[in-house]
Length: 275
Ligand SMILES: C[C@@](CO)(OP(=O)(O)O)[C@H](O)COP(=O)(O)OP(=O)(O)OC[C@H]1O[C@@H](n2ccc(N)nc2=O)[C@H](O)[C@@H]1O
Ligand SMILES: Nc1ncnc2c1ncn2[C@@H]1O[C@H](COP(=O)(O)OP(=O)(O)O)[C@@H](O)[C@H]1O
Image 1 (tube, helix red, strand yellow):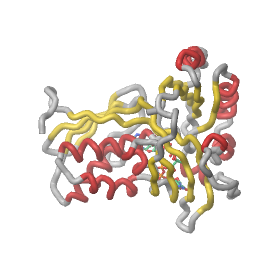
Image 2 (tube, rainbow, N blue to C red):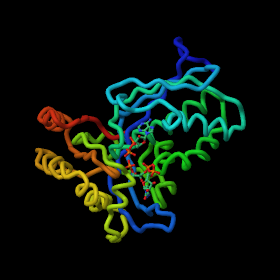
Image 3 (cartoon, rainbow, N blue to C red):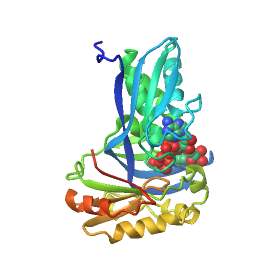
């Protein structure tokens, strides 16, 4: 395989959005059955990999602070899981450029794990089915992130059906996070157990059932959703995943840029578009 001059293979880790997320029921194993529409942004983290004698990880970028590069990091876990599934002694030097806030409902860790699986499938010349095999064990969102295409997800998100929705790709979006990390497990625990119905085929008229419990844990989410909903040109404002990141969709990128420019400094924001 021909490698770039500097020896690093690079792989984007696109941020994930749940355009709608319906929680249906709590299973006996504690996980919750979902119906969701996954979509991805053109922006995200970036993984780089090059051959090495032992597996290691370094982390840079605006959200690297406080994120450990040890064996618990999803990037290292993905590398170990893939080497084990291949039943070979494989190692790699990895670098993560962390541009997405941690534990924020846009799947940063899951996207990093999935990008690691993709880049190592190339670097180690493996059968791509090995990555699909290990993905669910790394997190409920990792199979969707491995695909990184608009898809309906059922089960805990591992039953995936890619869907082509006209006009979605290229949609201008603004992401806003109030700077509070919310734990996915805590948000599911705070869900009230009410099944509010299936997602159906029209995702716009759907909901994010985790908004209510997430807002109870992090009330600043209310302010973010209200602020986004009041911007000119917004056609939808909703929370993603278990929060606290919220997104607004616009028809026009210039109007989206005006909203981005007005975002309060105390909040993180990202102006982007759907892949
Ligand atoms: C809610 C979603 C929606 O896409 O997104 P995020 O908020 O994480 O971005 C995902 O289902 C999250 O997936 P992921 O972040 O991979 O979750 P995991 O690490 O597998 O699970 C963390 C914990 O959340 C709870 N959990 C997670 C998924 C699920 N369907 N039911 C649950 O009850 C479980 O307590 C689990 O131990
Ligand atoms: N590479 C990684 N990036 C982000 N978080 C990671 C990573 N590896 C492990 N984690 C852990 O996974 C948890 C979930 O992170 P993340 O995927 O960013 O959240 P979410 O699933 O809510 O979008 C965090 O609490 C963090 O400690």
